[in-house]
Length: 147
Image (cartoon, rainbow, N blue to C red; front, side):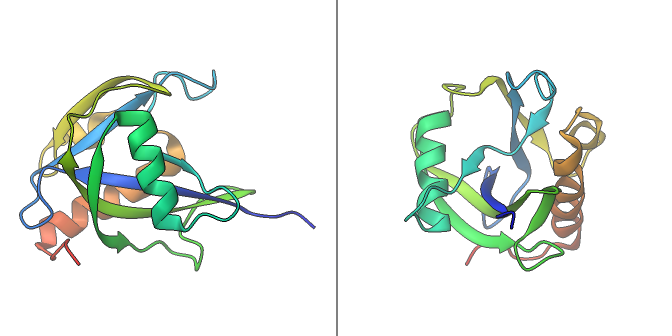
């Protein structure tokens, strides 16, 4: 029996209350994803909560602490399918402490507007693109993003 790997990601926004921008992170590895954009985050380790894993990943990858808002609910109970063996749950988040820097797994960070063509024009990891579209739609609908 194959266990589905649980991944967590953050849609880091300039503001949970009135989001206008999203922080996109460009991957450096593995080779098939190098140069593509994604949501920062990573694998949930044994014994970690989903939210705890996300806080750990944000500290390791970007050097920040963040407030988590609402989860951007995916189409399955486990979240957003990434491939046959992994799903990702994504939380809206806002930086509390620190300035995001590409410390691990990324070589570039970019704030992109939620309402313009730039966000959809980035070369996203294919599995992240439906999440980006859902986030853009949620922002366009003016839905509340905080808890």
